[in-house]
Image 1 (spheres, helix red, strand yellow):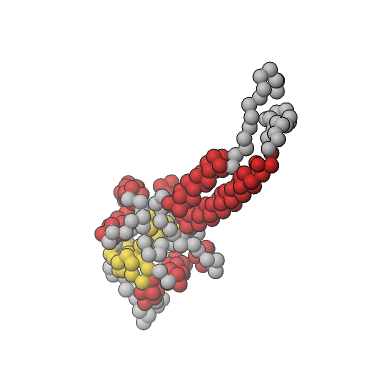
Image 2: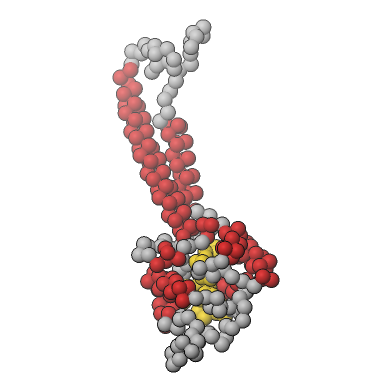
Amino acid sequence: MRLPSSGAAVDSHDVGAMRRVKLRTRLVRVVLVVAALALLAGAAASARGLDSGRTSGLPTASGVAVVDLSLSIGPNDYRTIRATLQRLIDSGGSLGLVMFSDVPYEMLPPGSPARELAPILRLLEPRRTAKSDAGLPANPWTQSFSAGTRISSALELAGDMLLRDGISHGTVLLLSDLVTAPEDVPRLARSLQALQDESISVKVVPLTPLRDGRTIFEGLLGKQALIAPSRIASSDPLPTDTSSGLPMTLLLLGALVLVVLAAHERFAGRLWLPRPEGRTA
């Protein structure tokens, strides 16, 4: 054993008796260091998965897709809608579906298999005019959705569906050009806040939005809540959205790291002798 600052040795005639204790302490130290590193690696992996899921996820078993079919939705927007729903089908998960213009209605309840979206895809075509597309089938929502747009009512319905079915920490995926009636903007802000208060996250796929609409949603939700349509159309996989509750795995691993470090100091720390009186550092 050595003094902290001088390097002077303590004379001992039975140093051999300490050899077993020394080996045991070294073994305990190695085990605790390896355990701490493994826990740190697990915590880092848990944190990465949590971040990716929250920034750019699509809803699966705990989600509701909300689709805007108002008059302002154009051909390119319908392609993005179909591509997004196809990605949800390919995920093999489950979700609910709401379609809206001025009035929303529930097409699929939360927890419905995503494959049930497949028959709807062929119906999601732009509204056709008699002059240019005579003889072609009309969009089945042409007559029902002929007035203005109220995004707030659709978000409220999606939130009510999740609460009704007892789904906590759900996700609402809004596909819209973000154009809503001017008088709907205050209610929209209240609706988004109410969803957040219920721990329901909101993701948005902006369909060729006007600048004002995008600014409103970025201000209310943050830029990270918007998923670029180009990402939907690409072949890159989109991570699925996860629970927005407390990251229990990360918290548990962090607590275990602290326990291991405390055990290291208790059972494997160095023994320092006090400095002799009168000796300066």
